[in-house]
Image 1 (tube, rainbow, N blue to C red):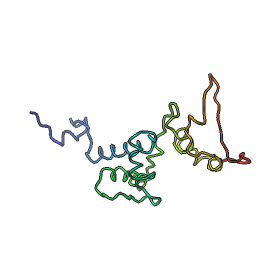
Image 2: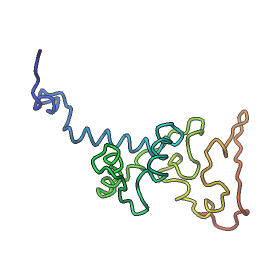
Image 3: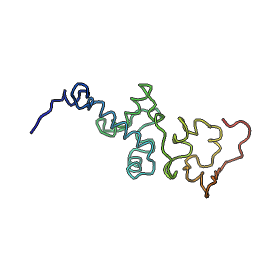
Image 4: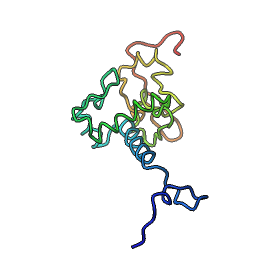
Length: 163
């Protein structure tokens, strides 16, 4: 069996190491990935299970305090990533744009898929007029051959300035 020192594993390539980085950084990477997936994979089974256990806010109250009974759980560490990143002034949720694909897993108004902010933030006044603010992209935007159709459903017709 060959043993490699941690120093070699963690050292950069130019120092003869494996460029693995620190374990803390790798842990933050993985926790951040799961945090992002939780907030972007709305229709997956595992997200539905988490929301059924911890509620629609996934254990975060309106105050963004972590409300999970077992303070040492992996889930609590995943949820903490959002709080930690916001303290570092890193908007993890807006650092990535979601790939729409068929639109079956992308919320039209709340997911970030068209620019660097969600449509509900960018166009709040017309967002408030939508009869289904949880609508998926596929429910509102359809393609028929080469033309696109947008199926708006307003509580009343928008008037005036919409931004």
